[in-house]
Image 1: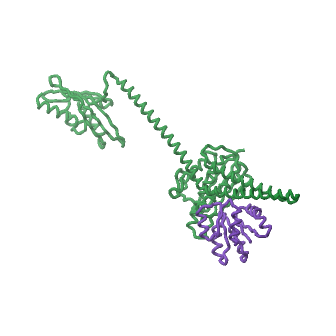
Image 2: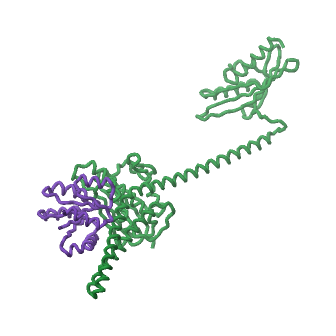
Image 3: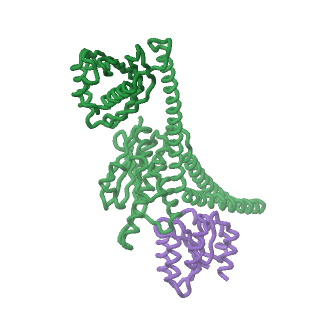
Amino acid sequence: MKVLVVDDEQDIKVLFEQRFRKEIGDKQMEFVFAFSGEEALVYLNQHEQEAVLILSDINMPGMSGLDLLAHIKQKYHKPPPIVLMITAYGDKENHDTAMQLGADDFLTKPVDFKLLKTKLNQLIQ
Amino acid sequence: MTNQMAEQLEEQYNNFVELIKNNYPLENISLLFVPEIMGYGANLDEKLFNLNELYEGWRIQKEQSVGLDIQFEIKPVYRRISNGEKVAIYVDEVNIKMTVEGIRHENELRLSIIFEFIEERWICTHFHGSYGLGVTGDSWAIELMKEKNHELQRMVDERTIQLQNTIHELKSTQAQLIQSEKMASLGELTAGIAHEIQNPLNFVNNFSEVNKELLTEMNEEIIKGNYEEVKAIAKDVIDNENKIIFHGKRADAIVKGMLHHSSSGSGKKEPTDINALADEFLRLAYHGLRAKDKSFNAAMKTDFDPSIGNISIIPQDIGRVILNLITNSFYAINEKKNKSEEGKYDPTVTVSTKKINGSAEIKVEDNGNGIPQKLMDKIFQPFFTTKPPGQGTGLGLSMSYDIVTKGHNGELKVDSKEGEGTKFIIILPIKS
């Protein structure tokens, strides 16, 4: 399963690679990273045929995670990629907006990776 | 005394009252006073030796009274008939209220009149007006003056206490206003602070957990004697530790900055990395606004001069100024964006620093709507705001101005073009 992680925090790459090192080592999962909403769209456009699960931050300079989510859910209909939002703002408004825009799940930072792994497994199934 | 005499006496008295009120025809005063009437008073016109001089004195008074609002209130104090009912003494209290150039004056006079019955008619032979004093056994009214002095002193003391209380209240109100401005700007930051703390915490928590797992693995590898693998794991652990330290410090700086920002104590000047300070507040303001207004979006540009070094400033105060200017800029671009066609406007805020001769320049620039020329004189005035009620205290820029000029001997300049944008420049002296 390929996962696209979208976050403006550069260290997110090392963190995911460390926390999923077993899954990466076993080739169960593959991670690619985009450090802005715009960068994520470029990747998706270049890999249109690829099935990908998206984990996106909300608060990023430029295109926000919510904008990215709306764009993805509108543009990629068949099948729409699974999008899981991860944000430092766990407020109700953000949660409800994300859900209305079609987010498949919603997690807050600091990320509980055990929970994230469980949710990823559920979403993949 | 016959009834006729009594009636005539009353009539002459009434004539006298009318004269005081300037209602008695002056050409008839020879019917009211004896020709040799004499008297003197406090001003030069009141020294008279005959009827002509009395006439002259009253003429001046009548002339001066034209157009003035004068009200009389006359109360009898004392009446006495003596010398075989041929001399009558009338003593009255005359209260005169007069408005001169809009200010109301009040005089309380004691008027004494002597009428004598000469050649079958009552006529005034003497009169005297003075300030009445309710004293006895005190010819010069010294005791009364002392009493008045004490009364005045008491009033002065009372007023002084009132003024001190007022000053105290004003100072406390001012302190409260400053604190509420700080709190208002802190409110704008809260969400930004949450974001800026949760992100580093995400790394601190997760890298710590990773390290725990790695150290368990390392232990297993040690038992196996697989030291090459141990070395590789140790390197990862160290790298992760460095990340934990970095992000821990990042969160620490945010909390310290927040506490500094809301502190009401007088800060001390300390060498401060102005570039880091500006960057920190730009991020906090951005994330703060973004959290409140999900649709808010702007390009943030920075151009920091690395040669600027550390400058001796009160960091929480200058931080507050920078935050205030950035918040204003964000507000300005958001206003313009809301009124612009989609895609036709790129809202941008630029924060830059520059070392110029002996000064450090911090510039906060936006491409918003600018400040109308007619408001330029007012923007640094306390309580001036263009924001809707409840959205701004109107103290941000005036406080910023005081912090830069009075607190740091610097300058706060503004350059704005209506429709194009605004540039605020903080100039701070760099001490060698």
